[in-house]
Length: 377
Image 1: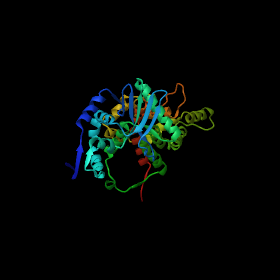
Image 2: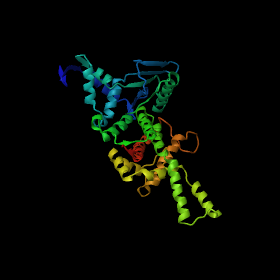
Image 3: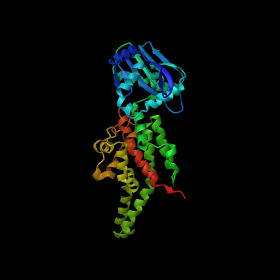
Image 4: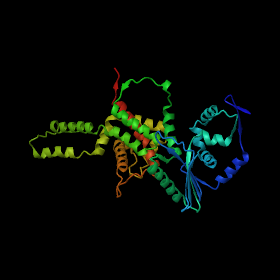
């Protein structure tokens, strides 16, 4: 019997079982960091959002007419093994598995614990499994997966969605950059605008519930909050310039037309750019982006947002291209009609592209909130 962190535990490992699992998963493919499948079997990590918890143990349904079997339950050992094998680099770098294992063993009173029991229970995840009597493509399996989840969403009002390891990566990456505990932070020294904070909190809540579009739009609302004031301020400066520098007089019809055109030419993208110019320290933003990930700013310079047809950033036109990128992505999120306009489809191939825009939006929003705060008296 070995001791783990001072606790006497005997962990039983069935080597033949582990070898059999290793052999079996060679006949499977592992996709998107969370999906294990072959021609007759599909398994993917799912999570129930919000305050709901899963207490059913196992939910199973059989479609005898079409030869399908659906089951939501603890993950198969093959799935767990594949999850670890395909994400070993991430797990070593980010996930504190030794801490999770220690906490798990502290809660368990058994002196003898099977390795299979540990693997299945200390991660506390569930998966949706689909079995088919006939061979199916991955695309067909994925459609069945989405259809079954919607069936539960619609009939049980159950907020269950497909889960990917990249969602955990996004959360952990921000935490690693900040890496503060409650004991290490000071009391607030500034007073922040409540409405801006509410939008920021909504964005952070969306981070944990996998609502990426809502997360992006919540940060966008923080920028949008200043559109009217910034537009009026900029308009007044331009009007003042026309009267004092260019000698425009209100009785001159031609000059009045100039004023009208000046008002009409401002659109939402222009106002977005004005807000960014007023509140952003661009060097600080680049520093934040590089601290987040040393390749992230380079990614923004080299890559467009494909689903929105949003341009890459240009260092020589940084505010112009930054505004264009943000505004174009925003439009793709809010326009859902069929047609020529680019649009975003949730839980689709576009999901990862949108996730890549979130750190940019978060650091912009944080600068704006802080810039518009006041010192506490």
